[in-house]
Length: 277
Image (cartoon, rainbow, N blue to C red):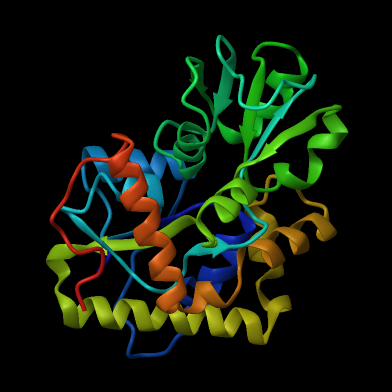
């Protein structure tokens, strides 16, 4: 029985509802009860222990674990207009973040790597759980914060302003959509089983698109933000055609992200293939 983990965010619970509830058919391998954890916890499990057979990972973390994991083409979050936001209470000029304390949702999140690619200034990154970032910025405990997930839709309620849409910066800089997180599986499982797992996740995505209402109660059980419109906006932003299959454009974006991370010294060099079939 395979172990699996993903985040409690609406995009992941929407995607995996079918697989978790046995709706993807008898051809799928057996999975244990999924472990739901924030993405930085999942990143840490992969980097320190290679704990799970199948796991959601930030693409930043993926760049550190290619000896153990390969990327699956289904189930990920990649797109346009959906990147992390750098927010603050007061305007900050351009990329002049020197001396600032900036909250990030984990050292190995894609958000943290985008911040480092965007600005090489001498600032302090302060890791914390993503749901605590906006209140900390609003209280003045940090100067800025990089927010993800539902926070994109609610930061103005905390009287915060957006200094930079880091996803928009990436798109302007590279022409690619922003790769946020993907589904990785143990390299040791082998191509045949990896293809079966990927096919089951793809089918789960298709089932979610075909009947979005079926997963509603499962999504709301774990969502940080329970407002129906916020949940719908979250899913609409982060789940798209790339979630079904990264395709050529999606893989090009992932490869560009890894190449730039290695060139900047953020990611280690690796001869490993990102996918193996």
